Length: 178
Image (cartoon, rainbow, N blue to C red; front, top):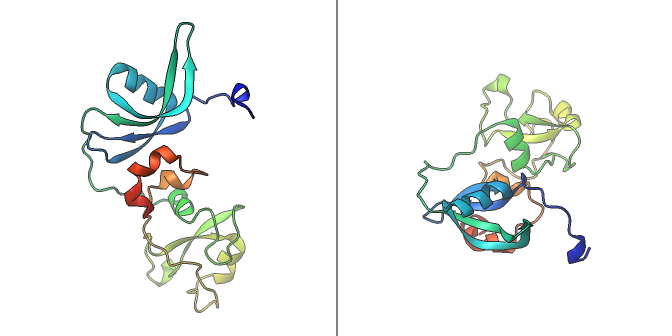
């Protein structure tokens, strides 16, 4: 696909990395929101995507990374513990057999009936077959092994949905990519 045949730009898709005034990663913003922030003076563009929005009289570069001009205070990053985020953390892969996609469930490694809590360290993605096979037992009792021990997510989970991390983002994500 040549430059003249580029795919149309989805203005509502979260494709722009947003940093606060102190260069801390806040998340992703849509192209529309990020262009409006830059044009209104609420943010500065740190990296361009190489794409443009065209108006009758001008071309507006589409940002890849923006930095807000005012500091947005936030507490320590806490990723909400929910089904979707457990599946994202485990990359939509059954943690027992390695099967990807399909109908995945969330399994308590130590079953709830035995005092297992709903924590990052006790929840994993599992296909229905493995979840049924394990039942109300621990993986050891069921003769199953976890692919990796469950832990709280290290990367911001919005990155796990991306097929590829844009090169322009890497300097700002170094702490997460180590």
